[in-house]
Amino acid sequence: MKKYEVEETSNGPREYRVYWYTKGVNKFAEKIAWYPKEMTMEERRLVFKIDWLVLSFSCLAYFTKNLDVSALTNAYLAGMKDDLELTGDRLNYATSMYYVGYCLFQIPSNVVLTKLPAQYYLPAAEVGWGIFTLATAFIKNYKQLLVMRFFVGLTATACYVGNAHIVNSWYTRQELGKRNAIYQNVWPLGAMFAGYLQSAAFSNLSGVGGLEGWRWLFIICAIITIPCALVGVFFCPNVPDRCTSRWLSERDKVLAVERLAKNGFAKTKGVDRGLIKRILGNWRIYVLFVVGNLFWMTPYPSSTPFSLWLDSIPKYHEDVPLLENLSTITYAAQIVSNMACGWYSDYRQNRWETLGYGGILILISNIILLVWNVSDGAKFFAFIALGVANGPTNLIIPWLAEFLSHDLEARSTCIAIVNVGWVVVNLVVPLAAFPTSKAPRFFGGYIFMVIMSVVELVLLPLPLYLHRRELRKGIDYAQRVRDEFAGVGLAEKTEGVSIDDEVSISSAPPPEYAQDKKEKEKEIEVSVQAL
Image (cartoon, rainbow, N blue to C red; front, side, top):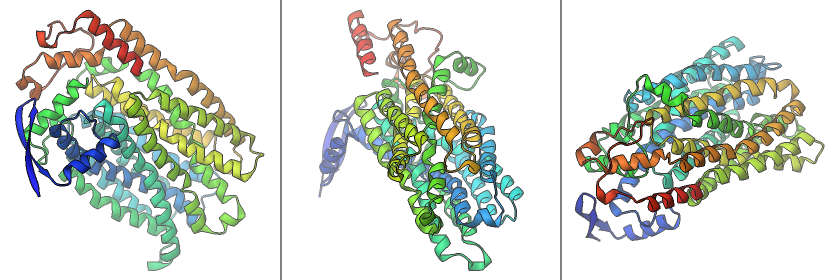
């Protein structure tokens, strides 16, 4: 049964077909804060489409990437270590070769992404790393492993930062935390699934076709990865002002741009020489580069060190399937934490508070592991708590996106720059602080992590202080975008909005959008409180 309702929109009255289940779905969505109560039916329909188009391919691509990346550690525990003679720190070096390739092209890749069609560029990269993952199944020695990991990293470089840019280009501040939580959850899901997949491959496929179980893991990962690239070709909508998706109407595309501009998110400025100045002349990239990478680094023991500690316990070492399954517990904890932190930070309309809670948990957990002479239960708690703490740390990207809402190209490039820092951390920290030969104690590594946990908590208020100082001086980039958008016609809204970061808006908006001094001061005060 269906009926029709009429709703007033910015484009005049519109008639909607309403099905019997619509009101129930909308009430449920409001209860979980998926849609704000004040959001119109027209905008809800648009956001529903965006969720399916943007998150479907972004999550699938990120899932397959992490499936392929996690396969190395799982294969190492399931027989690759002995077959390829990965003695000493060779696992660390193989992991590092992936990150060398991953690091080289990240920044250029996200700059290129602002010019090339994302619906073709990102799937092509996915096909590339799928092919090199498949080739890993047939390597014969350690040197070949290093070569394959380098090229897997090189071709996968566009995946995380590219899709993070797409996800953070479609949503408002009230929506970013939840959608980023879903996107970030793909990483632990991929890692968990790889563990279960390896457990099944080890138990059921060892010896099939004359191949060891760990080789079958890479084959299966490739079989999953390559077809998923087709989803991007058909569904990835690019960014709002360069969207050519067949699944969105012209009105949808206009509304997508309008709602973002009203929320302080500017359209494309274009890639030119000024981009470097806009990035390097902004305190945001320097502060969030340091703070973000500290928060991403300090929960590191929840991954490989946790697996190596489990492997050092005889009853787990002798039962490979059980070892593989137990090593996924920290990822499960992260999944729950990601969702809770995403929703909570959207509800609170700030990211720093949740990051602060995570920083305290990271510090406590690393102190327990530094002491080490505690029960296995206490160690287990510390490792799982670090998995939980990964949830708040994933708010770094939406926080960065909000700080750079006024500049799409700078935002895309800065996401890549900050992530390059994370790549360098993953190159250096495992080799310097957590070499495999020191497992499972890692005394020096835990000393380093405790110190960095303190530093990150000390530095967390710095971006808040600098942003509030700007607001007190009357510098509000998001408001500039809103004012500029309010002062242009519908044709200009659909064609593009350009804001010069260095020059204040010279032309006043129409009277209906003007704000007197008291209203402006009140708005700034509310913005400061929201932070």
